[in-house]
Image: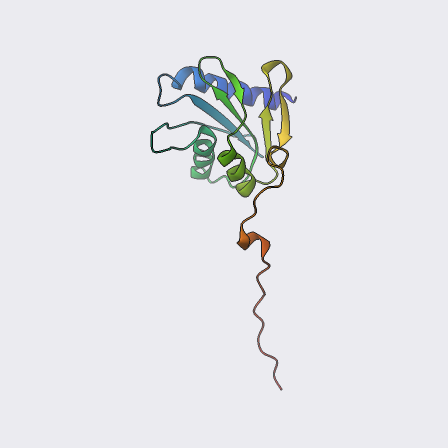
Length: 141
């Protein structure tokens, strides 16, 4: 694993230790853009559902004008280590950043894998499957 990936895990771990206290915030995520900036977030637990830490980190990047992320990792509170993204997050990551790498695995064997590897036989929106015809002016006779 690259040093920049290790640093990303360290960033998420630091946020988990600092901000994930109690039942409302139990996972932290860190995402890196192509220019090396790191964006973090924590999950927002609520009984009606709530955004996962990965989605919050994506939103944090978006607020800074970042449209492409290259790597992301989630870390659990209470020293749980790196956590794989849930199914919904896998789909969101694939839809927004099809080439993103996701750091997964046990702490002693972490690896960065393409998100598509975590989501085989993925769902693709109908709008993404259908090629929209280009409007052309009518030919003159």
